[in-house]
Image (cartoon, rainbow, N blue to C red; front, side, top):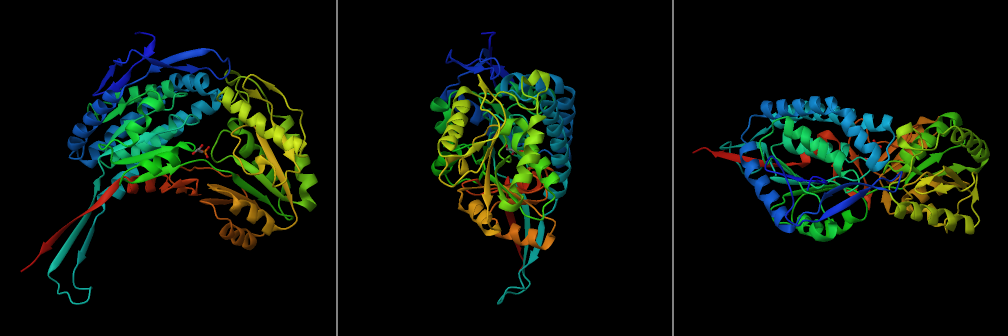
Length: 478
Ligand code: G3H
């Protein structure tokens, strides 16, 4: 069926035998946009078998050649940036400017992965037996890194391309093969990226891409005995996957409620700039978005005034027009965000802007005087609405940060560096930024969540290391 995007197995775009498809809705127009294949469990088997066979051969391909393939992919992706970005604009309502950044950043990430992989994977260890009590110097251990096998990569809708390649690049350089399951919204952009892989001339079967309904192939794929590692970014589904997964390494990044702590001595202009950028870019649909501001009461009015001035300048509209605030991903998401705002309003919070929504487009709102009994104090809206909690002590802010199940990132604004470091130590989150909004990049930095925000650590270096195992050969001398 020419209208349905095929899935990709063994180097070929293949129609599903199910005869069924899944629809992708344009979040901006709410109209049907694309159809992707609703693959079957048999087709998952086919992909896994193909990945397994290709991996055995790929593991024997010299490292420099693997790197060469990745550099070629990066170049092709950058060449195709307009096509891929255009899909992102239509499928996930990311503004054109940010969509282009996502693709170029992805190309850079792949190049860096190839270079870093050469260094990390060429290093092994040589140990002798005699340091350990009771041993003579008669055993030599040669330890090196070997691939895990088949890596299942599941990226989310908000960075479907970038968070796909941040899993695929490290997996491939380390000698693994990849089964990719794109998110439904963003699938076509991701499939375009897969076509770049196709054009880069990787061996057939090394990367296969399956699409479909979670209810049909979700559990089946994540619990498939042929999968040797899962790298997932997304929401609660990750917790369910982790509970069901077998004895395989997991890399999970499951959202956040990043706390921004503003102290009395903070540069309020700087803080406001970062809060607006961090809280509202891509309409708040980033796991690293600023999701709650805890500000000292004495400077709260001034900070709020500065934030409001900046919110006024945000443009609201369609992604094609490069607006700052664009429609959120789905009606379900928009309804959820609205529910959080209504709950806060009913319980006495102050909205600095009038609530306005058209379809999935939500105008930015700053919700002041939020109290702990309001849902928005704890839940992740994934929308352009930001709660402010006025605090009487820094400890109160630290407590709010640590009491949440999410613990991805956080940030603190103060001119006192000693205090900043002590607060960073006290905030129990994966990363604390001092005097800047949370962010994942630069992409070689470690990136990880504590508690319900994830398992393992990402970033190029950590992902490469996570996607290998140590193998030792011990030479026993007479
Ligand atoms: O949404 C989750 C992403 O990992 C955040 O990445 O900080 O570059 O927006 P970012």
